[in-house]
Amino acid sequence: MTDRQPEDGDLVTVAIPVRNEGATIRRCLESVLAQTHRHLQVLVVDGESTDDTVAIVEEFAARDPRVELLVNPQRIVPSSLNLALEAAQGVWWVRNDGHSTLPPDYVELAVAHLRTGRWGGVGGRKDAVADTDEGRAVAAALASPFGVGNSTYHHGTDEQAVDHVPFGAYPVAVLRELGGWDEDMVTNQDYEFDYRVRLSGRELLFDPALRIDWRCPSSIRAFARQYRRYGRGKVNTLLRHPESGAVRHYVAPALVAGLVVGAVLMPFRRLRSLALAPFVAYGLALTAASALAARTVRGIRSRLALPAAFAAMHLSWGAGFWEELWRVRREHGWGAVARILRGGR
Image 1: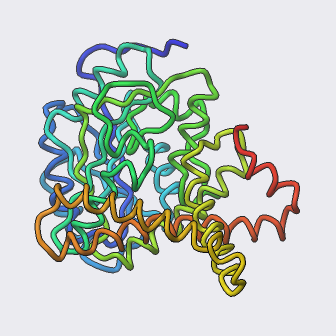
Image 2: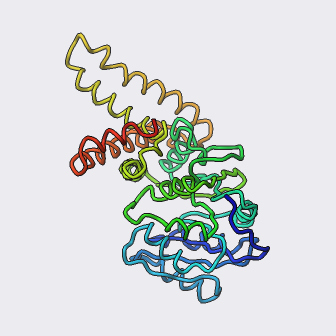
């Protein structure tokens, strides 16, 4: 499928949903406004922040007419993105977050790919950054295939077609054709939208030359809360599109199920070897992956926190998945659960 191919200099709408991003929004906007592609409409959609986010955005808007502030009383990301889409005047769309920064040529490179007409969406590396001991462990876990499986945008090095891109760039016409983002999807709305892009017959491109520095959670506790939400959100995506399931979406739930079954069987002496198997297997894998990732992490405290970061990611995602699946069973019955668990098979 081929989409419109505009001329050089076409307006790009950069959408930035935010809420209480006062600590990072200044760096975010500085990176966006420093793009080599200068013809921008920068829409910051605030979810009723209670810190100084709005004041900082207004400061930027007062001195650069490319910056506009919108307010989203619903306070959730998909509705913020849809508000920005309604106000978008650009031909191309680039998404960023208030705690992320872009290299100067990010928009230029993304738009160059979109102008070919081959791609329905484009994205690149989402490189986690942090400045605390636990945060650096979280960033290392996010960059590890053991942590995120074959989620290419976390560690990919080759240009390729993929099933999902982070903070994607798209033709605005495609966004409007597909109806924007599903506002019932508080989390995982970006993956769900990308699935609809692919259903429309378009492909998504991952280009490792496109890199976003994304400030990850600074503590393992916050990381666990985030990944529990992600696990729950994935169930809602699979409820709508069970055929979108990939193997990596079921690994963490299977791990949690194995550990729970092992714990239940542990009191039975004859079954103790079987009960210990998932604990031993995961423990060995966790130790090996932590030792490997430690080579990329500075600071002894960050290295010691690596096993906890990996475990927080896997166990929280898996627990959130099962928690939401139980809600689906109550509201939609066992048939819906079976469709989710079968996934794309």
